[in-house]
Length: 395
Image (cartoon, rainbow, N blue to C red; front, side, top):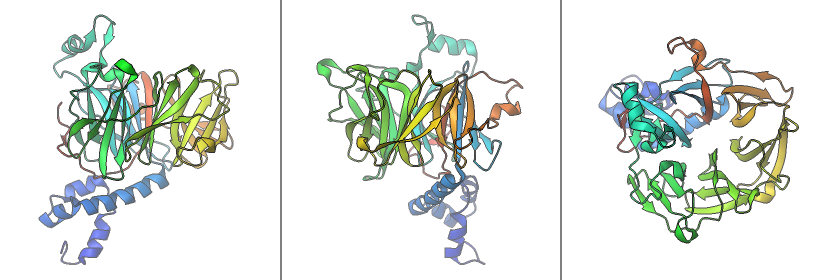
């Protein structure tokens, strides 16, 4: 019995509804509580409830990267709150360089370690004199659960060719068949013979393995235009014949196969901002026109079926469109604009609002940072552990 006053099944029903922050404290109450909260079945049930809450409240975790420090201001917002619900501390002593999605409350990040002893040492370590800039290849991939404050360093693949994080496409997701979290990495450019090196990392084994699989031909991936949905990761890529043949490349984590999906037939080129994203559990594509200052959004009615593209709605006119961060309130979407600003756009009346972000509270040296990039993800309060992970370990 977990309590002398309540039946065990009733107590379980109460505990599974609590947020992760409370459950982490309750693990110390008794051995029976610890056993329950760390049980895989309990974690799975808690995750399902968290998904439902996240979907109904439109919980979003927003990363706003300072253009100078590359350290993010991380805010949790909700459709029911005009302001930030609360701030989330970033991983200490790290610059953020890449975001490869979230799955079940776990984020896959590319970070660079900052020397704690001062900026001069940091500059000597990461400055690239040839290109006169910081070299992101000095960094690492990590998995991070902000709810449990646990992070895990991903070992560097021994087969990575070329030896450069910046020259590899990454994707993070869940294998519904083996119930394992995976990272896939694909060489950005073909190797000798036109073959691309593909490797898959399994969290359960903490190791990489080479995958003997055919990757459809393409030239190069659009930087941040990626998305994940239902066990499949998507990249927006240039086709072999240039910009007019751009497509969506996908990787199925369960079947471990790639496929190419054509864009809507109405798309004749990708001049201007374009992106793939998830909208109400459907894969979506947005294309902005500088000429009309409007953006059109298409969604797929069937996952992976290119003939099912349907034009959903039009946004604008907007002068500074960058990407869509997903749906938020009823009939509203979050939009990242040039200049590091985020707005909510009402699809019915075209009203624009600006959610209040972390740095507006002036808690960082009372200075407003120069925001360079914004990334937004659905947030799930998750107990899912990272095998071998540690609490904010120093990489």
